[in-house]
Image (cartoon, rainbow, N blue to C red):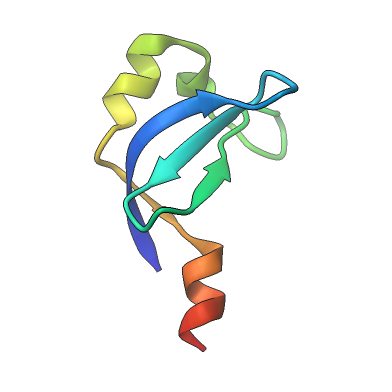
Length: 64
């Protein structure tokens, strides 16, 4: 289920987490070649993704 990003924070290992409008969260790592998200490395990049959508796996599971 697609959900909007409303905020970001760092976890204990300094990996970025996107907070979604459904109250769930999801890691958004830049970890090539598996995940190519260079925008997560800068504040400007993260700010530019506020309001964009990610697929919330927890909402997908609870919908079933």
